[in-house]
Image (cartoon, rainbow, N blue to C red; front, top):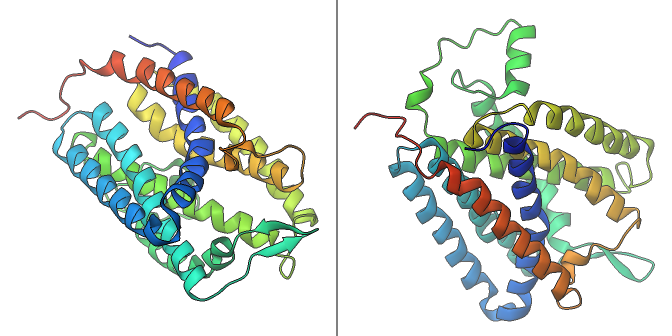
Length: 286
Protein backbone atom coordinates (compact mmCIF):
# COMPACT_ATOMS: atom_id res chain seq x y z
CA UNK A 1 0.00 0.00 0.00
CA UNK A 2 1.32 3.44 -0.94
CA UNK A 3 2.04 5.85 1.90
CA UNK A 4 2.65 9.57 2.13
CA UNK A 5 4.49 11.44 0.72
CA UNK A 6 4.70 8.91 -2.14
CA UNK A 7 0.94 9.02 -2.71
CA UNK A 8 0.92 12.74 -3.41
CA UNK A 9 4.17 12.68 -5.39
CA UNK A 10 2.95 9.93 -7.74
CA UNK A 11 -0.43 11.62 -8.20
CA UNK A 12 1.32 14.88 -9.09
CA UNK A 13 3.68 13.19 -11.57
CA UNK A 14 0.88 11.28 -13.34
CA UNK A 15 -1.24 14.38 -13.85
CA UNK A 16 1.81 16.46 -14.80
CA UNK A 17 2.83 14.03 -17.53
CA UNK A 18 -0.60 14.26 -19.14
CA UNK A 19 -0.01 17.95 -19.90
CA UNK A 20 2.71 17.59 -22.56
CA UNK A 21 1.13 14.35 -23.78
CA UNK A 22 -2.16 16.15 -24.36
CA UNK A 23 -0.46 18.73 -26.57
CA UNK A 24 1.32 15.97 -28.47
CA UNK A 25 -1.90 14.03 -29.05
CA UNK A 26 -3.52 17.10 -30.63
CA UNK A 27 -0.55 17.70 -32.94
CA UNK A 28 -0.47 14.03 -33.97
CA UNK A 29 -4.20 13.95 -34.66
CA UNK A 30 -3.91 17.00 -36.90
CA UNK A 31 -0.91 15.59 -38.78
CA UNK A 32 -2.09 11.97 -39.03
CA UNK A 33 -5.76 12.49 -39.90
CA UNK A 34 -5.38 15.78 -41.74
CA UNK A 35 -7.95 18.49 -42.36
CA UNK A 36 -10.51 16.05 -43.74
CA UNK A 37 -10.58 13.46 -40.97
CA UNK A 38 -9.26 15.13 -37.80
CA UNK A 39 -12.74 16.21 -36.71
CA UNK A 40 -14.12 12.69 -37.14
CA UNK A 41 -11.26 11.42 -34.98
CA UNK A 42 -11.98 14.16 -32.43
CA UNK A 43 -15.68 13.25 -32.28
CA UNK A 44 -14.77 9.60 -31.72
CA UNK A 45 -12.30 10.60 -29.01
CA UNK A 46 -15.03 12.52 -27.20
CA UNK A 47 -17.41 9.57 -27.52
CA UNK A 48 -14.73 7.33 -26.05
CA UNK A 49 -14.43 9.81 -23.18
CA UNK A 50 -18.18 9.59 -22.55
CA UNK A 51 -17.99 5.78 -22.57
CA UNK A 52 -15.13 5.87 -20.04
CA UNK A 53 -17.16 8.28 -17.92
CA UNK A 54 -20.20 5.98 -17.98
CA UNK A 55 -17.98 3.09 -16.89
CA UNK A 56 -16.71 5.21 -14.03
CA UNK A 57 -20.24 6.12 -12.97
CA UNK A 58 -21.26 2.46 -12.83
CA UNK A 59 -18.22 1.40 -10.80
CA UNK A 60 -18.73 1.95 -7.08
CA UNK A 61 -15.06 2.16 -6.14
CA UNK A 62 -13.59 5.58 -5.40
CA UNK A 63 -10.15 4.95 -6.90
CA UNK A 64 -11.36 3.41 -10.15
CA UNK A 65 -14.10 6.01 -10.58
CA UNK A 66 -11.59 8.80 -10.01
CA UNK A 67 -9.13 7.44 -12.58
CA UNK A 68 -11.83 6.80 -15.17
CA UNK A 69 -13.29 10.26 -14.57
CA UNK A 70 -9.87 11.85 -15.02
CA UNK A 71 -9.17 10.14 -18.34
CA UNK A 72 -12.75 10.77 -19.48
CA UNK A 73 -12.25 14.48 -18.79
CA UNK A 74 -9.02 14.51 -20.80
CA UNK A 75 -10.61 12.74 -23.78
CA UNK A 76 -13.73 14.92 -23.78
CA UNK A 77 -11.73 18.13 -23.42
CA UNK A 78 -9.30 17.25 -26.20
CA UNK A 79 -11.80 15.64 -28.56
CA UNK A 80 -14.87 17.80 -28.21
CA UNK A 81 -13.75 21.10 -26.70
CA UNK A 82 -10.35 21.82 -28.21
CA UNK A 83 -11.19 20.52 -31.67
CA UNK A 84 -14.50 22.39 -31.71
CA UNK A 85 -12.49 25.61 -31.41
CA UNK A 86 -10.12 24.40 -34.12
CA UNK A 87 -13.08 23.70 -36.41
CA UNK A 88 -14.75 27.08 -35.94
CA UNK A 89 -11.46 28.99 -36.12
CA UNK A 90 -10.85 27.39 -39.50
CA UNK A 91 -14.49 27.80 -40.52
CA UNK A 92 -14.38 31.53 -39.74
CA UNK A 93 -10.99 31.99 -41.36
CA UNK A 94 -9.29 33.31 -38.23
CA UNK A 95 -5.58 33.94 -38.79
CA UNK A 96 -2.92 32.97 -36.28
CA UNK A 97 -1.24 35.72 -34.28
CA UNK A 98 2.33 36.07 -35.51
CA UNK A 99 5.44 37.39 -33.75
CA UNK A 100 8.80 37.66 -35.50
CA UNK A 101 7.53 35.52 -38.34
CA UNK A 102 6.45 32.67 -36.05
CA UNK A 103 3.05 31.60 -34.74
CA UNK A 104 2.64 32.98 -31.22
CA UNK A 105 -1.02 32.06 -30.76
CA UNK A 106 -2.93 29.60 -32.92
CA UNK A 107 -6.33 30.61 -34.37
CA UNK A 108 -8.31 28.32 -32.06
CA UNK A 109 -6.72 29.95 -29.02
CA UNK A 110 -7.67 33.39 -30.31
CA UNK A 111 -11.28 32.16 -30.41
CA UNK A 112 -11.30 30.28 -27.10
CA UNK A 113 -11.46 33.39 -24.80
CA UNK A 114 -14.86 34.21 -26.30
CA UNK A 115 -16.24 31.40 -24.14
CA UNK A 116 -15.40 33.27 -20.91
CA UNK A 117 -19.04 34.30 -20.41
CA UNK A 118 -20.27 30.73 -20.66
CA UNK A 119 -17.49 29.61 -18.33
CA UNK A 120 -18.34 32.12 -15.61
CA UNK A 121 -22.11 31.61 -15.93
CA UNK A 122 -21.92 27.81 -15.69
CA UNK A 123 -19.31 28.05 -12.96
CA UNK A 124 -22.00 29.53 -10.69
CA UNK A 125 -23.58 26.09 -10.48
CA UNK A 126 -20.41 24.61 -9.05
CA UNK A 127 -19.66 27.58 -6.81
CA UNK A 128 -23.07 27.50 -5.14
CA UNK A 129 -23.16 23.71 -4.93
CA UNK A 130 -23.61 22.65 -1.31
CA UNK A 131 -21.84 19.36 -2.01
CA UNK A 132 -18.61 20.91 -3.27
CA UNK A 133 -15.41 19.75 -1.61
CA UNK A 134 -13.36 22.43 -3.39
CA UNK A 135 -11.17 24.17 -0.78
CA UNK A 136 -11.08 27.31 -2.92
CA UNK A 137 -14.88 27.56 -3.08
CA UNK A 138 -15.29 26.61 0.56
CA UNK A 139 -12.92 29.42 1.58
CA UNK A 140 -15.27 31.91 -0.02
CA UNK A 141 -18.29 30.21 1.50
CA UNK A 142 -16.81 30.56 4.98
CA UNK A 143 -15.51 34.11 4.65
CA UNK A 144 -18.55 35.46 2.82
CA UNK A 145 -20.86 33.72 5.34
CA UNK A 146 -22.66 31.83 2.58
CA UNK A 147 -24.91 29.10 3.93
CA UNK A 148 -25.08 26.44 1.24
CA UNK A 149 -26.95 23.86 3.29
CA UNK A 150 -25.94 20.43 4.50
CA UNK A 151 -23.83 18.39 2.08
CA UNK A 152 -24.60 14.77 1.31
CA UNK A 153 -22.32 12.07 2.69
CA UNK A 154 -19.12 11.25 0.85
CA UNK A 155 -20.23 7.73 0.00
CA UNK A 156 -23.01 9.10 -2.23
CA UNK A 157 -20.70 11.23 -4.38
CA UNK A 158 -20.25 10.46 -8.06
CA UNK A 159 -16.46 10.53 -8.22
CA UNK A 160 -16.20 9.87 -11.96
CA UNK A 161 -18.35 12.85 -12.92
CA UNK A 162 -16.74 15.07 -10.27
CA UNK A 163 -13.23 14.29 -11.53
CA UNK A 164 -14.15 14.65 -15.21
CA UNK A 165 -15.80 18.04 -14.71
CA UNK A 166 -12.97 19.20 -12.45
CA UNK A 167 -10.47 18.35 -15.19
CA UNK A 168 -12.48 20.11 -17.89
CA UNK A 169 -13.37 23.23 -15.93
CA UNK A 170 -9.99 23.94 -14.39
CA UNK A 171 -8.27 23.38 -17.74
CA UNK A 172 -10.79 25.69 -19.42
CA UNK A 173 -10.49 28.37 -16.73
CA UNK A 174 -6.72 28.67 -16.83
CA UNK A 175 -6.60 28.46 -20.62
CA UNK A 176 -8.72 31.61 -20.68
CA UNK A 177 -6.61 33.30 -17.97
CA UNK A 178 -3.42 32.76 -19.95
CA UNK A 179 -4.92 33.70 -23.31
CA UNK A 180 -6.36 36.92 -21.91
CA UNK A 181 -3.08 38.05 -20.39
CA UNK A 182 -1.21 37.13 -23.60
CA UNK A 183 -3.47 39.44 -25.62
CA UNK A 184 -1.53 42.64 -26.31
CA UNK A 185 -4.76 44.64 -26.56
CA UNK A 186 -5.60 43.61 -22.97
CA UNK A 187 -2.28 43.08 -21.16
CA UNK A 188 0.43 41.34 -23.17
CA UNK A 189 2.85 38.59 -22.21
CA UNK A 190 5.35 41.14 -20.82
CA UNK A 191 2.85 43.10 -18.76
CA UNK A 192 3.53 43.31 -15.03
CA UNK A 193 0.27 41.45 -14.33
CA UNK A 194 1.60 38.56 -16.40
CA UNK A 195 4.53 38.37 -14.00
CA UNK A 196 2.05 38.44 -11.13
CA UNK A 197 0.21 35.48 -12.68
CA UNK A 198 3.50 33.63 -13.12
CA UNK A 199 4.77 34.12 -9.57
CA UNK A 200 1.30 33.77 -8.10
CA UNK A 201 0.83 30.44 -9.88
CA UNK A 202 4.25 29.25 -8.73
CA UNK A 203 3.67 30.14 -5.06
CA UNK A 204 0.11 28.82 -5.13
CA UNK A 205 1.13 25.51 -6.72
CA UNK A 206 3.99 25.04 -4.24
CA UNK A 207 1.53 25.57 -1.40
CA UNK A 208 -0.81 22.99 -2.95
CA UNK A 209 2.07 20.55 -3.44
CA UNK A 210 2.94 20.80 0.26
CA UNK A 211 -0.66 19.91 1.07
CA UNK A 212 -0.75 17.20 -1.60
CA UNK A 213 2.18 15.20 -0.22
CA UNK A 214 0.25 14.81 3.04
CA UNK A 215 -2.47 12.74 1.36
CA UNK A 216 -2.68 9.08 2.31
CA UNK A 217 -5.22 7.83 -0.26
CA UNK A 218 -4.56 7.90 -3.97
CA UNK A 219 -8.07 8.80 -5.18
CA UNK A 220 -8.40 12.11 -3.31
CA UNK A 221 -4.71 12.78 -4.06
CA UNK A 222 -5.39 12.51 -7.81
CA UNK A 223 -8.37 14.84 -7.55
CA UNK A 224 -6.24 17.33 -5.60
CA UNK A 225 -3.35 16.94 -8.03
CA UNK A 226 -5.47 18.07 -10.99
CA UNK A 227 -5.73 21.76 -9.95
CA UNK A 228 -2.25 21.61 -8.42
CA UNK A 229 -0.67 20.56 -11.71
CA UNK A 230 -2.75 22.86 -13.91
CA UNK A 231 -1.84 25.88 -11.77
CA UNK A 232 1.82 24.81 -11.85
CA UNK A 233 1.57 24.35 -15.62
CA UNK A 234 0.73 28.04 -15.95
CA UNK A 235 4.37 28.70 -15.08
CA UNK A 236 5.55 26.25 -17.75
CA UNK A 237 3.29 27.84 -20.36
CA UNK A 238 4.41 31.38 -19.51
CA UNK A 239 8.09 30.43 -19.53
CA UNK A 240 7.56 28.88 -22.95
CA UNK A 241 5.86 32.07 -24.09
CA UNK A 242 8.87 34.02 -22.85
CA UNK A 243 11.13 31.70 -24.89
CA UNK A 244 12.97 30.34 -21.87
CA UNK A 245 12.90 26.90 -23.47
CA UNK A 246 11.57 25.06 -26.51
CA UNK A 247 8.18 23.42 -25.95
CA UNK A 248 9.28 20.20 -27.58
CA UNK A 249 5.95 18.43 -26.91
CA UNK A 250 4.38 20.45 -29.74
CA UNK A 251 7.00 19.06 -32.12
CA UNK A 252 6.56 15.28 -31.66
CA UNK A 253 8.06 14.54 -35.06
CA UNK A 254 11.33 16.21 -34.10
CA UNK A 255 11.36 14.97 -30.51
CA UNK A 256 9.95 11.47 -30.85
CA UNK A 257 12.51 10.01 -28.44
CA UNK A 258 11.80 12.55 -25.72
CA UNK A 259 8.04 12.11 -26.07
CA UNK A 260 8.53 8.35 -26.02
CA UNK A 261 10.32 8.69 -22.68
CA UNK A 262 7.53 10.86 -21.31
CA UNK A 263 4.88 8.38 -22.45
CA UNK A 264 6.81 5.46 -20.95
CA UNK A 265 7.20 7.33 -17.66
CA UNK A 266 3.48 8.10 -17.70
CA UNK A 267 2.55 4.44 -18.16
CA UNK A 268 4.97 3.26 -15.47
CA UNK A 269 3.94 5.85 -12.88
CA UNK A 270 0.25 5.33 -13.63
CA UNK A 271 0.60 1.59 -13.08
CA UNK A 272 2.51 2.18 -9.85
CA UNK A 273 -0.36 4.37 -8.73
CA UNK A 274 -3.30 2.24 -9.87
CA UNK A 275 -2.18 -1.29 -8.98
CA UNK A 276 -1.93 -0.79 -5.19
CA UNK A 277 -5.56 0.37 -5.13
CA UNK A 278 -6.87 -2.45 -7.32
CA UNK A 279 -8.12 -4.34 -4.27
CA UNK A 280 -9.88 -1.36 -2.81
CA UNK A 281 -13.19 -2.26 -1.19
CA UNK A 282 -16.39 -0.83 -2.53
CA UNK A 283 -17.36 2.52 -1.02
CA UNK A 284 -21.04 1.73 -1.53
CA UNK A 285 -22.72 -1.39 -0.22
CA UNK A 286 -24.49 -3.23 -3.01
